[in-house]
Length: 598
Image 1 (cartoon, helix red, strand yellow):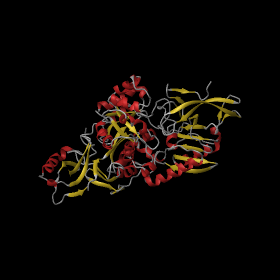
Image 2: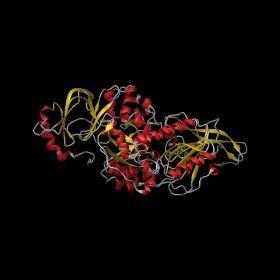
Image 3: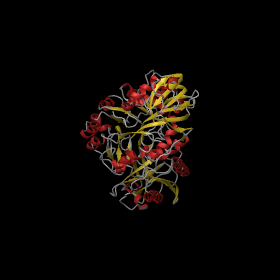
Image 4: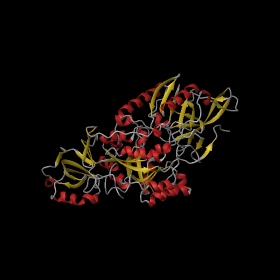
């Protein structure tokens, strides 16, 4: 596959690399005295040199004969060196940062490449949004490998979003040099039921000889999982049990072990490796969704490697899981993922394997970060007007909008969504609530709150109504336009007045997330770029997110990353019960469900 992500194509510089390796031509750069983490053989090799030319590695071993008068010699002083780390599944939009600012945040933490799925912005703006991400990422040294959004909308017929992507679209977009595969195929029922269009989307990817990435979120590892993998789907990041991850690896699927800001799956799924005597080559560490405060406070893949080591994964094995394993998953190990001759000179310097502190970061032979700071600047970005004006709610929202009427007199039993903190799943619960003046109300004592989803792309005026349990909110309301995957306007609250304030606050600022109480806005993260991102720095956004987190705590919420858990309430491809702008969806049968239980 043509690789536009390296400084030079190998055929352009192979003659020079061979000449450097044999000593005929001096190297541009030589790293001396390093402890090489060799991910090919799972060993650490002391006193290793690396000769670099044309952005690629010419020699690994003793490079004394590669040094000339103008060679830049870097003394590693016994530090470990490893290949630059690769995130095999990430949604940049979930960081709330532009692609440019995201790169600035993760590169100093040792991330040199990402396989990103921009299906968030694609659900809002279609391929015009994807183009914005491509152009933004190109201004940075980060290798941003694009996996095309596959499910836009995520579950057709159950929600309204801002765009529709067809197999014909995929066929055309696969021609882009930035594209290395297909983003997560969330429509696993479509795969299993042999839906023609679903298989056409994966088929166009396979015709282009590119990778189909997966999303298999149910705890079934028999015929259903086999059916899914048989369609050519190569990897999956949705394992929440060790047995899920293990069975996927046994069936030749790359199990992507997730540890994001809200989804803390690694503690459980790492057991697939640590408690079984298996080859870990099909295990990959990924983040999926990472908020700016996590990037600032903990880091990116370096944090996830540390977490894997804490869970008992051997340090070198953990490094393999973010380098060569990931590169092999995407058929790119001939270019990246190891420190070996001919590969891109993407190299990180680590002081020790216990704390895994990244001291220096090199991409294509250039030192781009040191001691947690970028050494280079990126060109400024501008964004088209349409991308900053995406709040098209086709109804005037007032307190009366949030009245839920019923024919029942005193009591009514409703279906409610019970969240699971730090996990992507939820439970369907049947809960009895009071009826007052012909309307169903929130019940703080039972921790059950009104929940609304408003269509915000095409002025349709559609909204869905439900209830959610598990946030421990005692007063006020919350709203978000980060509401996967259609990213409509989601509002949850204890009372109608605050719910209206929360909704209108986001309509006025162009989207984002907010928490209100007693008629006052306690915290707001403005996300004017597609209602998903801000163009400010990670440091500025981290402060805004921290202030919002404090606001959530003021109104009673005590769970980790509550706004990220909240954002999954409308995602109708995750079990068990979800709410979209069209209504409640039973995600075990994929049918709409009535609010009231007869």
